[in-house]
Every structure is written in structure tokens, then in C-alpha cells.
Length: 157
Length: 250
Ligand SMILES: [Zn+2]
Image (cartoon, rainbow over the protein chains, first blue to last red):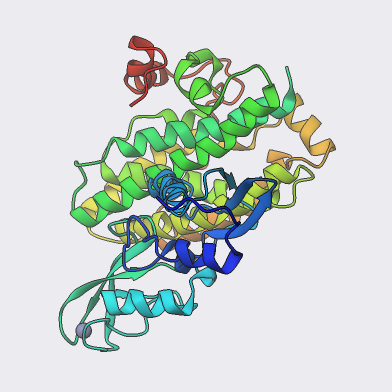
């Protein structure tokens, strides 16, 4: 553990948090996911404002633990996680880097049209929905009729 | 009795009891995709319960939290409508109940987004997105099964006939509702009925199903006067661990 006397800069802290993978989709970071809304010093305590994705997402408490752990590891001892539900999280908050990482990982990123644009495997456009829900609350199941492979689509919310 | 507390329990108990009922399908659904969809729906509803009952506990200010409200109240303190505590029946009946509930839930949340209470508006804004998704799925499933095979059509009609008498309770208005409507905190439930009827009429027409003529309504859930015998059994299972080992965590 690093112990340092000076206070880290905000860009430094954001960079640390950008190293923390989403517990359910480790291909993207918590910063990419857009759930970390604000960082603020309250005297010696770093207040981290987090907006949960889905109300019932079991990853929410793990996300809070991972944030605290990453900050402690980098020498920030006093961390306070503040939950903020308004404005509600939306897939518009996914970063461009996050969207590219999702695609590379095999998950089609969300589209305003409500369905994937291309098959993440072959790029095909002849796609069909298998189920509105998938392996985590944020995903739906689709299939590509070109390469016949099923794939996850990150739902648009 | 604080009307705000009462109202928040009504919202939270609806999502809690329905969430528990839907979770009973986990591992039992007709196909894997439906199993996942039902489990995710249940998860959303339980998550929404944490928001509603969390605020109820805060408003009450008696040192209870969402868990205490969910796990240590008895049947007579629950404020959910009877519709959500009914046993699941077959998959078709479960989806019919979901559709009848989602169509109302979606309408009430749209109104609550404009609540004069910012905390309620924030919860409604967040959960309405999830509920719109639930409604899309339950509506499509009801239409698909209603306008499906002879067997699925017959089962969906039977489900609608059985559940429709439980719809009316969603639109009951009492002193709690009047007080909240007056303060602009929540809509008068009765005012949602026309929009609801228009929706359900459209869905059932597409599903080739016939809505019963009678508006007779079973009541007693949302005011806690008389729940069905089914709620006690549900709570026995849901609350067992906290009753046997109070305060247990893991
Ligand atoms: Zn493909």
C-alpha cells in the first residue's frame, strides 16, 4: 500500500478507478460503465457519488466494495460512497472506450434503435432477438442469422 | 397513521410480494430464456422494493429499515393488492398477472415522476424504465400466447377470467389516496382507470381474448383489511430465516 502525504489529483483518482473492472462485465471499467458520477473532497474524506444501474442489480454492493478497495490500495484511507438515484443511470453514460471494449469482448453495445447494429462476431446485420433478458440484468440475448452464433446485447435504457 | 408511510408500503409491498412470487419460477420455467427473464424481472422488483420500503422506513422514523419492514411485519401489516399475492398458476397465468400489473405499474410511475416529493419522483424516474421493459415483455407474451394455439388461447382466456376480478382494487381510492392527491404527492388511483382500460382493451384485442363484462372487484389488500389465505403462506417461506434467526447476516 502506498502512503503519501499529498492529496492525489482528481485525474489520478479517475485513472485508478478506470482500472477497476465491472464485476459482471470485466471487459469494461466502472468509469466506462458511467456509474461513478462525482468525486469530491469533504475535508479529509473522498466522497464518491455512485448511481446504480438496475434497481435489483446484485453487482451494486460489489461495485461499492471495489471502489473502496481501489482507493485504499492507492492510499486514500477515508472514502465515503454516496448513492444517488436521480438522474437515473442510462446507457448513454457508457463511454466510447467502454462501447468499443464491449464489442471487442463479444457484447453488442446499446443502440437507440433498441437492438444491436451488427453481430459482434462476424459483423452481420441479419439479427434476431432470442430473449429480452440475458445473463445479467443489463443484457438481452440475440442471434446472428449470418454466422448462426448467439450473442449478448447490452440493453438500451 | 401517516398517509405517506401507508402509500410507500403499498408501492413497496406490491413489488416485494410480486417479486417473491415471480422468483418462485426460478429453475421451473418452460424454457431457459423464460427462466432468465422471470428471474431478472423478480430481481428488478425486489430492487425496487428496497427503494420504496427504504423510503417508507425513513419517513416512519422509528428505527426500522427496508429489511425490517419486509421480513418482520405480519400479513395484516402488508399493503399489497390481492392480485400480486395470488399463486402463480401455470406460466400463462403468471404472465397474464404480470401484464395486468405492469400496465398499471407503468401508468402510476409515469404520474409519480411528477410527484411534489422529490424522493418519490426520483424512485419513479428510476424504476419506470425497468417497468416499461417488463410491460413490453409481458404484453408481447400475452399476445403471443392468446393469439397462439388452441391450447394456449384457452389457458390465457382462463387466466384472464380468473384474474380480472382482482384488477379493480388497483383503482380504489381511500383517505390515504385523497390526502396524497391533495398534496400532489401521488395521483388519485381512480383517475388512472380510463387510461388503463384503453391499454388493456388494446392488448386483449390483439391477443384475441375477451375481457369479462363484470367490474366486480375483490378488495382488502391495499388497506390490509382482508388479505387472501395465500399471503400468509408466502410470508412463511419468505420470512422464515429472519424469523428463526433474527438479525442474521452473511
Ligand atoms: Zn454473426
